Image (cartoon, rainbow, N blue to C red; front, top):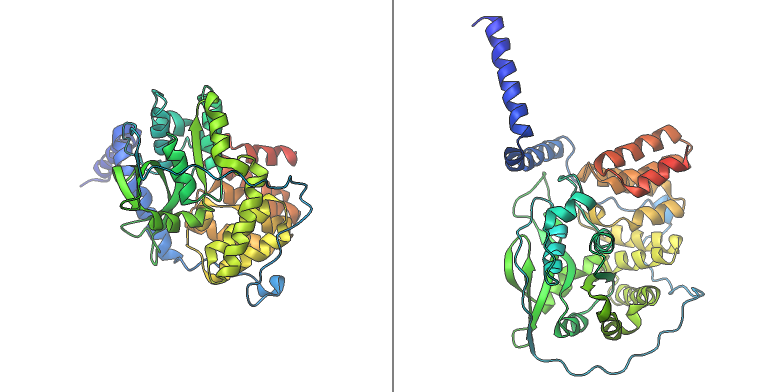
Length: 402
């Protein structure tokens, strides 16, 4: 075969590949396989280890300790709410139409199903095109979903809170409100060598049954009307600070606030969460997620040094490999506590596991900025914008150094 013929065949193969890539239907089928294959290969080159433990030279701690709940926050005191009325033992609200998620799209798909309770007519792609325009983006935060509802479905209201519990979920469902929770998800197959298979997922709850101690809800991956036990949900919910999201009509706000009681106020909700996470970490000092939640709640009140100490404890006990794919409060804590070695250690680890994490690039950039490496910081923030166009935090950072 002549060189000319080989070159022609190579050109034809290249054109065919470009054509397949540009075809949306074909791209949808093969892009995730390509992503999975490249992720696995990179995992062979740089094998996944556990989340790095804290740097002893900066922490000075060998065992976890429980700090006191910070005082002087200026928050109003928590007023006990009246004893709620007994709930029915079974509630099965009408479920919205089921929507199977696209790749990496459980957040938009779950939000879409919740919106359909209120006769919204869109789908998950109307949402993901705004809050995760690139399909490879592996994470959507509750804040981003609330942002979408408030700005693109303004006739509805949306809120999220932390420190939820099973009785509260049941009370909301009994009042007719679907609830979105973030929970643990386990992959069926590894994405890299030594993969612990742990990930995050969203679930829409629409009913419960005290006879079987189960919730029922739509899971955008596993299917409609899935059953999950109270105990199982509570355990898989814990790594995400027991966060829950509500969508409702403006005229329903008084009822929602009455059900939430003191937790309706976001600051008091965090105050309650801080006290609860402190108590859990004291009760079981070997619970890494209790320490992580404690650190996250301390970050809310800008107690960064104490938060960094709590995150030290969580890391030393062991965290899932993808933890910093979904939660970024350790980055804030270590940056503001001026513990840049720990910040770089965690952001680099996060990027090894999720190479398109805009949040990890953002905070790695801020670490470089604090060291005086302005060119490196700008490069990181531009990478964050490449992976998440219109990422407001990266745009702010770039504007900050101009």
